[in-house]
Image: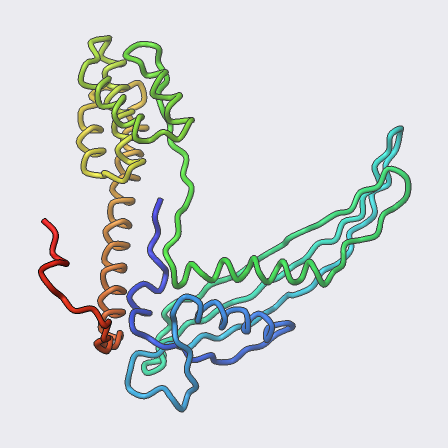
Length: 288
């Protein structure tokens, strides 16, 4: 399921000022965040350079940044496995505000709790280095911040029919194999040609709706769901239609965001200077 960046249009053409940075290893985390923002084409400026353009401020408050060795696990029996585990913990809050109005644009809680363990069949192994777990925790938290400024996909579960009639089992196999093009073709053919019981016909149209959703043809999916009639679980169809409407809205918002970003990029781009190639254009260069 596609999601629009949390800040969306608030970052189109905007520049970022870093505000207050507090807490243990907050400076290290903010340095990572600065690098990532630049890598995503988001310019950073100092307060004196705010000018009159759109500017947002990002403040970082880290309340936990540590890694501790867990209690040793002593194996028993033969063979025995002795385990030494270290757990990292990172908890922070990001506040994003409009520089001029002071309005809160977004507040994001970041939490990462990675762990790593060493195992040995004979003696108690060394604990993984706490410093390594802290680095991992910061990187995991950084990945969460990207939802502020880049779209992301979220995994969702769907129910899919695998009846033997009307070749629905074959559709199920195509779905599991991630052959979405083949799935859509099979589901469309099966739904239109299915002459089994009303429940199986309804299941065929339901599967077609799911197939359309997978390829993000939400109008086709809604049309297919409307033909399901009396399915074995009408609530399932209702939930699928509601999710389809949600996905459709997110996809439209995402498309708007991409168009706005492209327009801003083209606006900011400087026209290229003409380049002399040394090639003289003649009729010999024209081919039909």
